[in-house]
Length: 75
Image (cartoon, rainbow, N blue to C red; front, side, top):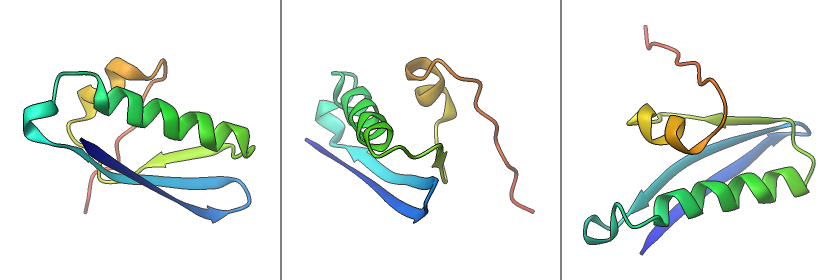
């Protein structure tokens, strides 16, 4: 139905992405489940930073995560 990747960068940081859900399965909660499962795993491993790289649309993550997300414009 979908996939989710994240990679350990150092002892405290994980970079999340890419992730995707098959078009016919979107708006069914699969993306939410993938993100929350990744966060749970990262938390279990005691990482402190979870960076969502190349996120889009950012509103998807803001609906799921009880955090203020900061974007970094490419320049």
